[in-house]
Image 1 (cartoon, rainbow, N blue to C red):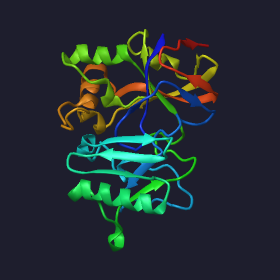
Image 2 (cartoon, one colour):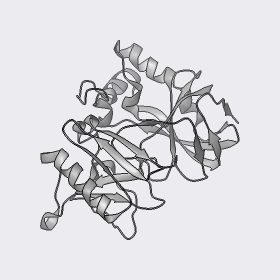
Image 3 (cartoon, rainbow, N blue to C red):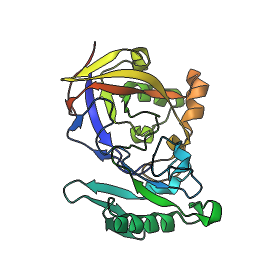
Image 4 (cartoon, rainbow, N blue to C red):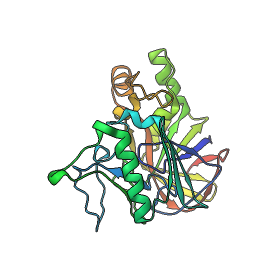
Length: 254
C-alpha cells in the first residue's frame, strides 16, 4: 500500500490543496488543515477558549454547496489567503484583525442569504486560533480513504464518484475495498511516522456536492446505506509518532 495523494484543506469547507510533503506531529492534524473558518453568526463559539463545534456552525459544504465555487489557496511564504470566486477575489492575511475583517466581509457577501446571524444580529466572523483546527473530529486527526473503497461504491451505484467529494487527507492505493475498517485500533506506519486508526468516518451531506460544479448531484450517504448497510467511508487516525510523509510513501500495518 502507498500514499496515492496527499491534501490539506486550509479553510473549512473550501478547496483542497495537494501537498508534495507534510510534516506531522503527535496529536496534531496536517499543518494548516482546517486552520481557518467562517463562523456563522448563530454559532456559540467561545473565542477565548475555542473548542470543537459541529461543522454546520461554520460555512461548510453540508449547508453551503455554493462554497465549492470558491478557489482558496493559503500561501505560507507570504502568510496570505487568496480566494477567487465567480465574481470577486480577495488576498488578505488570515492572522491580522484587518485581514480577518476583510475576509469576513468577503465570505459573508458571497454567502448572501446563506449567511446566518445570531442574537442581536450577530454577524458571521472569520477566525484563526493558533494550534486549533476546525476539523470534523473532536480531536485533531488525519483522514484516510482507500481508493478501492471508493471504487466499490462506484461499482455498486454504476457511476463515478469524484474522490474529492470525501475530502480526505490521505488517499491510499493498493488496499482491498473497505480494508481500512479492519485497521481500527491498529497502528500504521508511513516512513518514520506512526498513527493509530481510531474510527470509521461517517459521511455527511457535504459529499452530495460535486466539487467541480458545486451541484448536489449524488447522495453518497444514502448510496452507502442502501448498498453496504452503513454510511461510512474512510477512517480517522491520530498521529502518535511524528515525521514527514509524501505521495508514493509505503504504508505498513504494525
